Image (tube, rainbow, N blue to C red):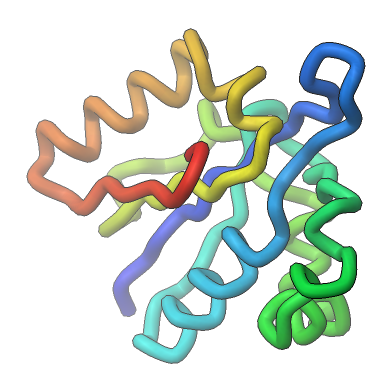
Length: 134
């Protein structure tokens, strides 16, 4: 079974503005990868709980994928106990996908472990992709 890591932010603030993951930008790819037969590992820059930007839960932004994700014990378990990006076993991964949200502007930039993971996957001719701010 192919395996993908979705890398999320761990940042809760962008300056004085509360932020985090934009839920749709993790939830939709999560289900698309699952439907395509991938094993999905949820990761983040710091590991542990991934903060969700409250704006992504607002009217017009809280999509069906987002609602499904929030009520999915496996998805929320992975989001609550995400793997630290530096602890990912890249030899078992077929793809690395960076999700979005303004939090990524804080902790994706100059992140040595994330940079190393991207470079390793790319050098191994594996898929590296991102959405929005990811």
